[in-house]
Image 1: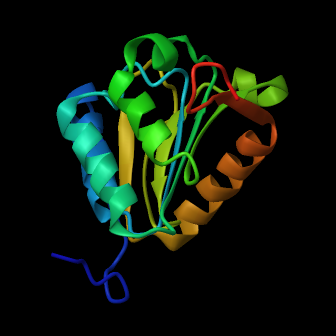
Image 2 (image 1 turned 90 degrees about the horizontal axis):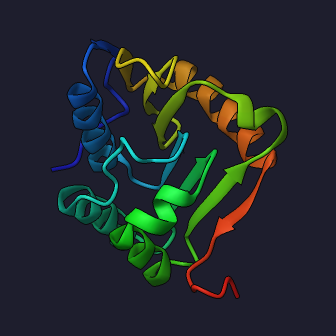
Length: 167
């Protein structure tokens, strides 16, 4: 089932638990048609390595050869040491999946968010707090988050590669 986004009105849902945030993440992955941008301190709470989320991400990347997944994190230890499924995706889709580590001002950011196609997003203003907002079909709000992610990405470097040697 595909969603017709041309006639959809912007929606905003307030989320109060981490579980709701994870459900919103799964929803966004399902809605994404071309790109996903994830910014999180280390991805440990996103459950990106769970079988369900792994399959959603894999289906997204398989859907079209132009689909892209960008992940920016403050620290890579969790991804490197506890995310074998995510690393397998990185190996399989190394030409369109990227994991960067923040530096400089970006390394001090306190929020976390996921952006799908510059149209849908879920954001926690303070990553340590469970409260979040899910915005669907909201081009205006998504554009601001897209620009924020671009600044973070520009202030980051490739940190996790598809091979163990980093080559």
